[in-house]
Image (cartoon, rainbow, N blue to C red):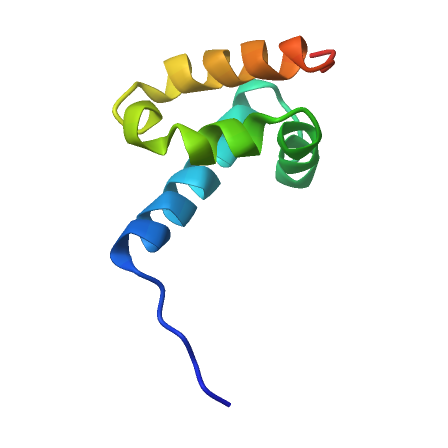
Amino acid sequence: MEQKMLSREAENRLRYLNFIILRFARGFKMPIQEAFRYLDKYGGIDFLYDNYEYEHTQSEHNTCMTLLHVCRKNGGQL
């Protein structure tokens, strides 16, 4: 079976997504899996991926608040 290596950029994006999902879960006192499902359902994951270049330069608090706003705009109830 052939293994494919991720590019450095893809690896950095994945690490960042994992980090922010964990911080979001902690900030809103929910299990990580629930935080992921919420962010996925209401567009937070797509937002983070699409806006990685900007968001990864922001504080984790600001990014989590932005995610909260994005998800609420898309029907989230947190």
